[in-house]
Amino acid sequence: MAVTGWVGLWLLVTTGLPTAFPRWLFFVFLYLAVTGTVLPFVRFLNVRFASDAAPPTPGNVLLRQSIWVGLFVVACAWLQIPRVLNPVIAIILGISLAVIEAFLRVREQS
Image (tube, rainbow, N blue to C red; front, side):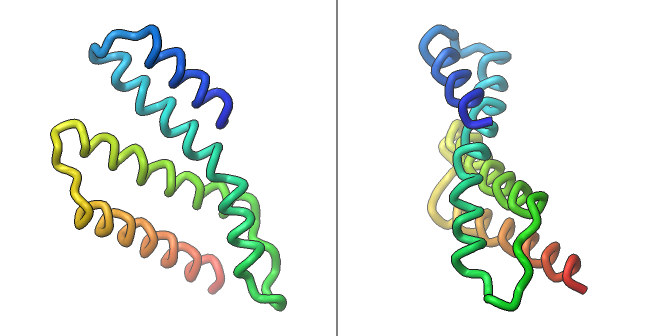
């Protein structure tokens, strides 16, 4: 995922014109690149901060958490186009995605 996203981004930025379709393609490649890149770090954090008694985190949860990070980055990039993004909006967006993930984790454990 990461290699496809980063290579696609590089090709798009170096050869594409900023019209409508390449702009949407930019967000798709950015999403793939960030999600694939952050996946090993999410696994490391889950292994590092999990309690010894807890079972290992399943792969689908690791992928879902990486997808949340990719969605956060793409949303911030999208909000930056009309110059709407500021630190408060980014923090609120990040907290809302973290709360959704926390609710999903609690639901899975019960």
